[in-house]
Image (cartoon, rainbow, N blue to C red):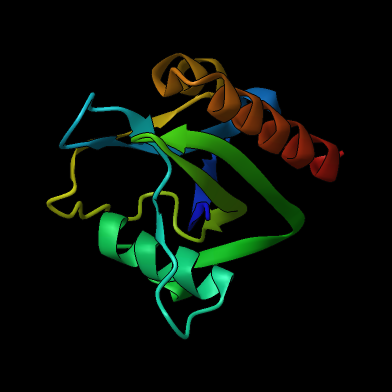
Length: 147
């Protein structure tokens, strides 16, 4: 059976001088272990939790962002399926915008750094093709919603 995890693709938008494709920045966290990969906050579903509750809990634990500091974007829910540590894994992601552009990020011991990045830079750091595709899809969804 596949491991199941959930997370949020956190983003913010620069509103000055205008909203356009370059105004969106994604939050990526660098893992403290393994290959020190960069991903959005995510984690395993605990008994009794639904998927979105898991994503919100993990975001608070890993980045210090509470649900009240975020707006979940309606209509975007994507699933990634891959192998991690020789086991199949499914991760479900939603898009979430921070309500305060300058919100403080507080990392847990699981991560050693964070960065706010434009789409291309985020894709370069993400390294995995599935995550790059997901970031592109989220960006396209946001840009089409603005138009």
